[in-house]
Length: 183
Figure (cartoon, rainbow, N blue to C red):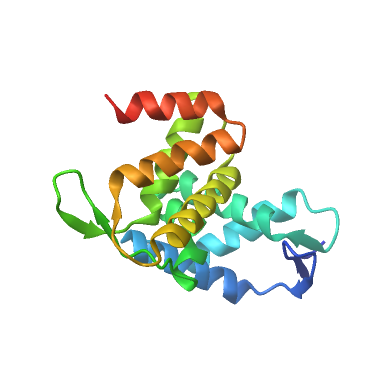
């Protein structure tokens, strides 16, 4: 069976495009500054998807999960993180700057929020990358709403991560996050 359609999160069906998958992988690899053949990796993703394909359509989350798996199998974990956040670059955050504890102003990196959430969840043996991505969008949306593009204190980002973990009923992950951030 061949992949013909992609089921979007909205439930809408769209024609599957190998070129679009290759382009997404290529962008993630460039952002992570890793070398590799995006076309070859895209074909590996499709082959992996075909193993479990029961219909001629596959949902977008399954594609994303498989891409992350293939990138990690090829020792490109940084590219897999960027791949998870490809959508952040197409719809950037209003927040551009972070004020560190020492007063220094640095560039805002949404991937750092994702990694913090992912580490906290990993401490409680939860390895759901899509859930970590969802919670990251909640943190970013909250910060964007509160600060409206102004520089955000790093302490406020940490507080927001803790709130979102608790709101999503990951109290143990929130506890691990708090312990980690103060050590």
